[in-house]
Image (cartoon, rainbow, N blue to C red; front, side, top):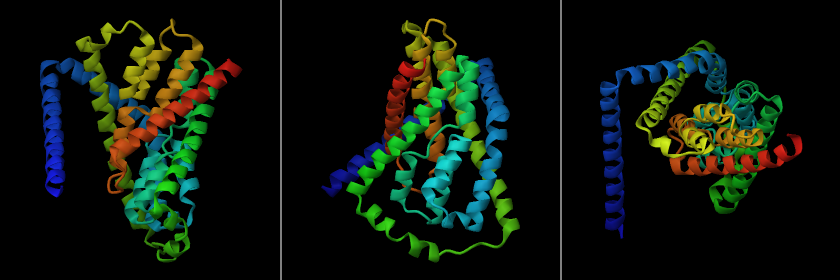
Length: 321
């Protein structure tokens, strides 16, 4: 049995290696064959990052890294602290805080899994301002999406907390060892070094986010150029497919089509924002490195979040729109 297990694992690793090489090779060929489109995609991604992501997230990243660096986060409730920062700042702040706490040993891997079920959210400024007011053009839709999104996150957290608590003995033991764990860790009083490290770490994290935005912006442009989406006549489904890759592009596509009813726009954007898109999931996985949170688990968490939030949005649209 051990030989079969290692053989299957070797095949999986080889398959992933081949996929990675082919994907990188295809991207290089595309950029050489269509340099204008590649340049335009990169410019769009960099503009979004510079105008929206960098000014909005850099202060939060620096503050969170500094608090973690001096050890104050060890004395805060992980659930409340992480959810608050995620809700205020947006993707992928929650994953960043969870990754930092997991790598520092403040919380175990199983708690990282639990926190990711409800501390991976978008921010209210993006939901209400960018999507509701700007894209959809309806403030009520923005409010519905925000309520359903954050309500869905909380319900998703309850669901996964119950499942993890029932299946994991490690989590049950962790709940009774918080006091002992806090007492083993103290403060770091070298504030200048901690602040400097927080700045360096923040720019590194934001650089990773930039790379994912540019990459997925290029993928959506490749799909548009190749005509893959032209065979789909329903613009709503086209927007959802784009949003599975990059939620902002998907929300913009759904919102910009006059043929789609307001309620359907609201529900679709809520699903995409709560799911986050593969771009956000990739960014989150980079932030969670070293915590043993797998891509398959995070994908399941975000699918469940999208489904729950979409259901809540449907109910709210029947009442409020």
